[in-house]
Amino acid sequence: MSVPLQCNAGRLLAGQRPCGVRARLNRRVCVPVTAHGKASATREYAGDFLPGTTISHAWSVERETHHRYRNPAEWINEAAIHKALETSKADAQDAGRVREILAKAKEKAFVTEHAPVNAESKSEFVQGLTLEECATLINVDSNNVELMNEIFDTALAIKERIYGNRVVLFAPLYIANHCMNTCTYCAFRSANKGMERSILTDDDLREEVAALQRQGHRRILALTGEHPKYTFDNFLHAVNVIASVKTEPEGSIRRINVEIPPLSVSDMRRLKNTDSVGTFVLFQETYHRDTFKVMHPSGPKSDFDFRVLTQDRAMRAGLDDVGIGALFGLYDYRYEVCAMLMHSEHLEREYNAGPHTISVPRMRPADGSELSIAPPYPVNDADFMKLVAVLRIAVPYTGMILSTRESPEMRSALLKCGMSQMSAGSRTDVGAYHKDHTLSTEANLSKLAGQFTLQDERPTNEIVKWLMEEGYVPSWCTACYRQGRTGEDFMNICKAGDIHDFCHPNSLLTLQEYLMDYADPDLRKKGEQVIAREMGPDASEPLSAQSRKRLERKMKQVLEGEHDVYL
Image 1: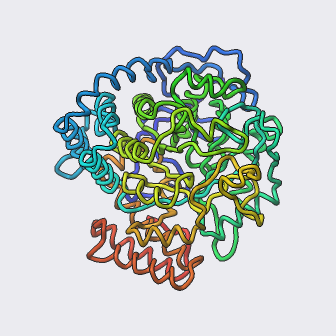
Image 2: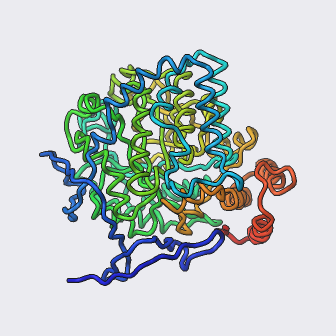
Image 3: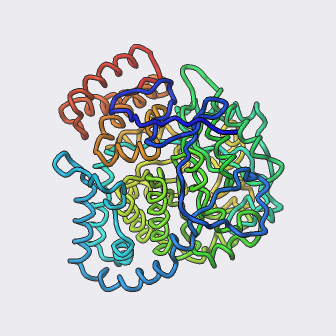
């Protein structure tokens, strides 16, 4: 049956709202209109690669079998990475060369009215680092205090130029821990017979979400293992349940990000059609093929190419906010940083939008995994701070996620290296939020039910207080996703330097909501002082006159009791 085409050339201007809360911005492409009245892109993609494997991917079956891709071995070029790491060692010892790279990166990231983005280039990575520059910075001796401080200062300056002093908060929500994979570092792996397996019922799930809402959370990351006992259809149902939960006074989850097994293009479309999902997150774990084989000896996850193409499939399905990540400790951290840059560049070239987020988890002990207690490539604190800073400089417009795997002290240090999002009040076991049990430390590893141990178990209200005391603005903003500013459109706003006129006001609005609904009197007083400062002449991020007026009007609505207000 032929499908009628309609051409959408319009694009919203800053400040305009599309029809419908979650309407998506139109693309400059021709799109087919389906029988249900929904549009899907018909863009042609280059490449003739199809993962050739006998490994079964029954959790998500591909029904759109015509898709072909660029060969991952070409854009995660192991030989090129190793060569860059080797040939850049001399430059890494040359303070002049390092400072030249930092100055260039800083200048390119600081988009202003007088230095607009190159109109002939859509790539955000023209404003980041090349592979050779990235390799040079990651090779700098972590004990070189002077140069490392300059790298940290550059990373923080770039982060603050793009994302200001905001830190977005979220919480993970584990729905099921059944898994048929054999990841050697994970407590959920199938061989761990001591792990108590469980799946949240609908009532359990509602209680978990309600408990998170009572902490003030508006954004969650929903996770599950890969197993036929908990199917993708089950997960789709769970997304709808999560989105439906409301609690007093005004609790609701406004953005559901997901970290689930790889999906086919056809199932990515089904996930997008829930109209509740923000970012699809998937960690490659390691981009080094030989290491990947050793760490994932069997199961669907052992298919390197199928896994690394997951973000491509999401993009092709229109789920254009994607997250990537590597688990540090499996292989040389320098290689993984360069590989994530190459993955980001690939997404930008193919889909005009790099990753919305990059996660940098460091391996922590997991129940029954000796490897997790003694990682093959342990990353010390100095090297970890360096890799975070270099990634921020290399991929300037991505949101960088900081987990509770790190201690409060380390999280404080990493925020100064360019992190922009963090989990708060986290638990990694199924049903943890509404049950009266707490995780312990290494003394009680045998009793753990979670995926890994946590280093920061502070409740959300303490995280909020700590962030404000450190000079940051806690944020639960979801406005860009809900107004259709995703994927390429979000990146374009970043590149044009317009993000402050959206994100900073919206962060303050969500903070005021939190203070009114969930904060004790002392915390509310501290928070309102932060808001007054940020709306006054001493604001960390000066707003345009128009945005200031809009913020004042919207803030008045919030103070009068209205919720879910944003620019």
